Image (cartoon, rainbow, N blue to C red; front, side, top):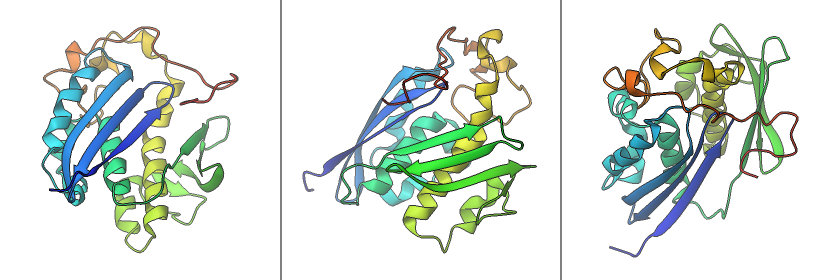
Length: 221
């Protein structure tokens, strides 16, 4: 086996701040480690231990993990792992994405920049994309609409989809909730902290939120 290489990925928004490091060699994931710098729920850092489930898998297989396997991961750490796996075979030194959700706009407008250049924007109406080349595509079926897209365009669209799915959380005062079990209790259990066996133990980390609008600091700055 060759000595391989390491890819580092990081994300921050109003509610979360995670880092991840993926080491790989010969197309295989060697190690995956992360850090939960800021989380909404007390048990979120426990998801770091689940990253080891990804070790030993081919890089290309990470995207093929079942929905049940993904739900046992922190969705944000898993997204970072997917991004790291995609960039493991690239020669680019660094890629920086920025996403902005404009909730003063009706319907809210989501915009994505890559390396300082706006490359994609859309609104979401009844869970379908509007105002972009993906008009009419349901968010949960976007992946199938990207089969003919370039790798770079597909990556941008999938990042903006994730941001579109979680951006509305900044309109909530999470400090009003005792635990994750009481935030939209009928929502699908799609991440580590929301699994039925642990959501009642996911206590709110009071004061962990950030509001980057109107400040001089952007996430990851």
